[in-house]
Length: 294
Image (spheres, one colour):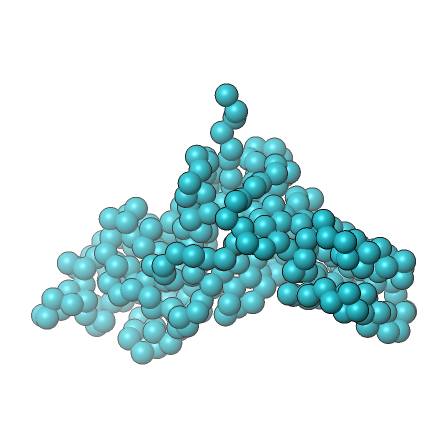
């Protein structure tokens, strides 16, 4: 009998938890919840889990630089898959405690709003319109905010979090979808030394790091030209500091191409011939979101 696979992720009840349940909805996988992203990475790097799940980019906030830097500088874990999942935050609390005369939740009874700082920032328009008087408090995760509200009844506290967290804590969703933008999606990476296959993938990506030698004018143009003349599509290019010397950067590039193709290995070889360092982060299935928003 094969050993049951395991995956490390951020706390139960977060968007990461919802996203992982979506990815592995047809598979028997053990979820190992971790409080901090460092613990998520280390769990797999130390061999305690097969994979880690990393939120890497958001529609509104862009790249999560801390998570990118961990992937580049702290661990050597290949990317095995990517997928997107909607980041939907809801106003969560006790409906019976916060009900007004009309039976609906009464904003004047809310004293404090709690959530993760990113989730809070994504709901500011709602907070300013409905709860401008409320105190705002940020915690380490949206699920921790929901648990804190549950542990402190009759104080007028509410949380911004997922439906999953509300159900786990047996609290009510006072108002659904309070995120400021309807198109708020997060891109997740599955990383680890264990191979992963998904038959539902319709496309493949390859991610690389390219570090340019110093004092070489026009080299970035030559690097991009190696892709351009082969008509290789780059879905993302982003510069990040190397952390070795002020003013030195590497380029994180997502390529809408498989490494098994004829053209991509040639492009990477040409870039190395220019004197650049090329590090392969992974060639992996890219999965679109096919479900309904919560």
